[in-house]
Amino acid sequence: MGLFIGSFLNVVAIRVLKKESIAYPPSHCVHCNHQLKPLDLVPVFSYLFLRGKCRYCKEPISIRYPLGEMATALLFMATYWVIGFKLELIVALFFICILVVITQTDLQEMRIPNAVVATGVVGALGLRLWIHPLPLWDYLTGMLVGSGILFTIGIVSGWILKRETMGAGDVKLYVFIGLILGIKLTVFSLFAASVIGLVIGLFQRVQGKQDKYAEVPFGPSIALGSLFVYFFGEHVLNWYLGYF
Ligand SMILES: [Zn+2]
Image (cartoon, rainbow, N blue to C red; front, top):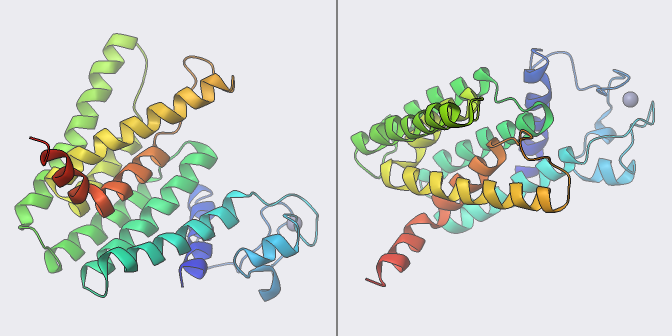
């Protein structure tokens, strides 16, 4: 299920960036627009079978598509393993879907489209009104504090460095993440995302791929950090607090 939903999320990411309809027309090659047949659309396997090239125009297909499909499948499996067959599983799968899409769009065009975030916020609100292991106010403060902290960091660092440092998309994304995580894990996830972002940034600079002020998409780090915290945050915090 994760493989096929991951494949659908790729389509969403591609089309939302191009402002196209998600439902129509049927899947086509991004290079030659040739309509794809069912055999071209089997997640991961088609990519391997076609050796990463379009069957019709031979242009390369981005490795991000099969990787996104694999990641969605593995995350779906891990989710079931961590959460089990509970209502919260619905929230978790929705959380993963939105984060996979914004990771794809942010890597492709350094954009976190409003349409995706808005879908996430509306969905998360609806789900949390129905499924909320913590009291509702916990999720609402998570939403306000998470986006508020990122917004403040963006303003202050913008002043100090005299340039835009934080995309508005990242701030809006935290409205969604706060609603899913609740206040405690939201704050923890900001910390986790920053550490991941720092490690990725340092790694790229050591490799000489980035100059000092190059823009690095923060969305993927936010996605990784918040998923990590969603799954393991409670354990890590309990373990850490156990030292005192
Ligand atoms: Zn093609």
